[in-house]
Length: 266
Length: 284
Image (spheres, rainbow over the protein chains, first blue to last red):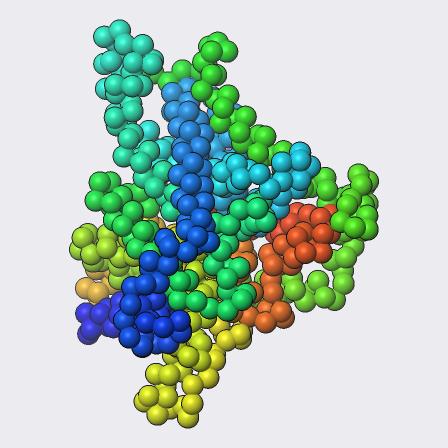
C-alpha cells in the first residue's frame, strides 16, 4: 500500500514540476511562429534563433558575462572571509558572515532598491559593472555557505603537520587547504553562476534600462506578445541548470551540501 | 595549526577585501535606503534630505492596507500549501536509495534556480487558451471549448507554489534526513498504520522544523515579484511589485524606501521568531 502511495505521490509532484516545462519544450519546437501544443510540425529553428537573432544573442552574451564575473567576484569575497573565520579566533568577525547571508535572506526587492538608490546617489546608475557588484553581493551567501562547510570538514592535523614541518601560512594555504576546499569552491561558484543567470529584479533595477540580460529580455518580450524563442531560451536555461547541478552532484556530495545550506539559512 | 586570535594588523589582511565590499555595497546602500525613506519628495522624481514621516503615513491609506493584507495572505497561503505538499514528499524522498535521492535533488535545484520570468512564462503557456491544459479538458470532453485560465488568483497561487515548493523541500530535507528512523519503526511495530504514524509520530517530532519552514517559505513568497504581474491582475499585485512600481515608474523613491524598510522589519521580526523557535527546539 505504502509503495503504491509513494509512487503515486512522486508521480504527482513530478508531473506538477515538469508539466509546464514539457509544454514549453513542445512549444519550442513548433514549425511556425505559434504557441501551439501539441506542436505543429517540428523545427529546431527557435533554438538557432537565440544565437542568430542579434537581440537574443546580445542578451545571452550579457547574461553569461554577468554570471561568470559576478560569481567570480562572489567567490573572491567569500574565500578570504571564510578562511579568516576558520583560521582565526575573532568572534566579532562573524558579523561579516551575517552580512553576507542577509541580502539572500531578505526579499530580493530590498537589495535591489538599496543598490538602485546607492548607484543613483553616487552617479553610476546604469553602468553595466554595477550589476556585477550587485549580483556578487546578492549571491555571496552561496559560496560563503559551501566554503564554511568545506573549511569545517578539513582535518586540522594535516595543517598542523605542515606547520610543524616549517611551511608558512601561504604555503599551507596553497598546498594543503586549497586542494581540500576546491570542490566546495567550485560548487559555490556553480550555485552563484546559475542563480545569477536567472536573476531578474536586482539586474532590472540596477541596469534594466541600459543592459538587457536574458531574463529581462524575456520579460520585455512578454509585454509585446509571445514568440517560441522564449520557449527555447527557457529550455536552454533548464538544461544548463540541470547539467551544472548534475556535475556538482557527480563531483561533490550534494545531500551534504544541501544539508549545510539549509541549516545555515536558519 | 591552532586557531589563534589575530596578533598584528597583517593578520587581519584577508578580511579587508570581503569586509570592505560588504560594508560599501550592502551596508551603505541599506543605510542610504533607510535615510531616503525619511526624505521629502520633490515633484519630478527628485527628493531632498529631510526628516519627515509623511512617507510612512501613507501606509495608513486603505489602498496600501489592501495591498499589504493581500501580500501577507498570499504568502501565508503559499507557505501552507508548500509545507502540506512538501512534508510527505520530503519524508518519502529521504527513504529512497541515495542515487535516486540525488537525481530528485538535482531536479529540484534546477526548478528552484529558474527565473521568475521563466516560471511565469511557462505557467502562462500551460494555462493559455492555445497551448494549455484546457485543450486537454476539451479533448476528454469536460469543456466545450478551450479557455484561458489566467490571469487569475488561482494562476498566481499555482505559479508561486511551483516556485516555492522546491525551496520548501530543500529546507525540510536536512531535518528529515537527520530524524531518527527508529521512531517510525517503533510506531509501525506497535501496530500503527503508515498514515497514522506519519501524523502522530513524524509531524509532532518535526513540529519546530515545520514552524520554521513555514516562516522561511513565507519570507521567500513575500519576495515574489514577477509572478503576480505575469499571472495576475493589478489587484493581485504584492508589496514587492508596489515598491518597484513606486521606485521606477512613479519616481517616488522615498515612499518606495519606506515600504522597503517596512518589509525588512516584517522579515526581520519573522527571522527572529524562527531563531527563537530553533533555540527552543534545541533545548527540547
